[in-house]
Image 1 (cartoon, rainbow, N blue to C red):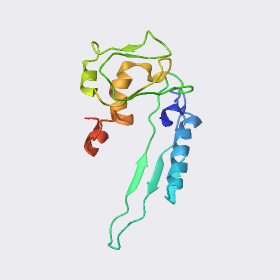
Image 2 (image 1 turned 30 degrees about the horizontal axis):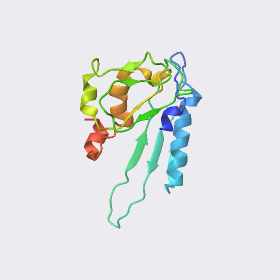
Image 3 (image 1 turned 45 degrees about the vertical axis):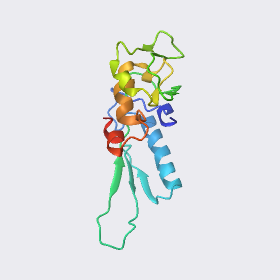
Length: 160
């Protein structure tokens, strides 16, 4: 949940790529962590893309695999002071966001939540970018993962 606390806000008025320097902050963290786990070839390019390769574990002639990522950003509001909340073993009840009790992710408005009973759900506290229910229901499954216990890898990758 550390990653969602990094401010990667973009600037739609900018002519640079990425549109703000702070968009590279998460990439810098990822490269550092890749080096810490032993990957020698991990880098952040001038556009904010992270590249990493893992050495082969076979003597066979096989192609190099490159892992490349980008960071999704939003211009709407800052990522500063995002407080992710982990709702472990979701019970099926409405989720009231603690920093703004008027922000409620209700099962009536979002019946999809009933399919998530027993899962771990990540939201924000209610006053930052992650507060919108659609973010919780769509971005979380695709990027952060509603952590379905025992989920097959394919589900974790696609959110289905």
